Image (cartoon, rainbow, N blue to C red; front, top):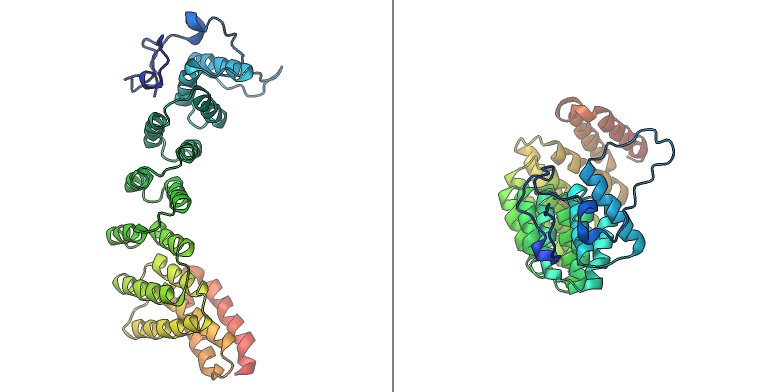
Length: 341
């Protein structure tokens, strides 16, 4: 947030009401400020013959020339903090500026909660900026308390439910401060709003993996939960992928086998009812493949016939975009198991 030149360097006073970072207005170049006369600006060195020289604005060159100068001298003061704010307004992705800002914050004993508010303003303007999210994480680590971080990420995710940075920050807060309790309720609200929200399904998997784990009780609960969601929207790829992950991470083999049998029955019911979701048929093929691999007592000829028949439907009618993939799966099943049938 661009601030105009002031003689006082308190962080809270350094913001300008200007909404236009390119407007010159009352801006005074650093080289024209009396209280910066003791600093010799350090121009950027592009070498003797720059091939493609960037056409920086006069303000950009002025701010970064002075930033390079204080970085070299190691000055840590209120005016340098204000200078970093100007530099970040011109380039909010400059990692070096963010790093040195943290160095200065610590050195001058700045108000970290006030810095969090500044950080929030930058995130709201640049929600997918790696550097500002890293800065916020460092501030929370310094405070060693989660504050309202979960609520903050919830607000950002309400704007863009797929904001990777917000999800990553939320997961870090959950893990660092053991705040998993109640997170599944938050995810439930997201899925009620959008059952196809892949990020919410991913977060559900993360929370269970890092809290209670995939015990028999958790697997049975999550299989039931997911099948109910699939019943609502049968072509929801996110739910089918989640179901696959639940089975793969089950810690008790006997529970995994019983749940596979349950899911297979449900899949066959959906198939008999006329559902032609490619995710349904594909999942059923995987279950049949697993049965062919693991169950030596099963009559394999019938399983091979059923699996290859499903592959044929997927290839020719339901998932024609991936027809070659399903032909490959069918050929693999046939070559591997037909001789044993």
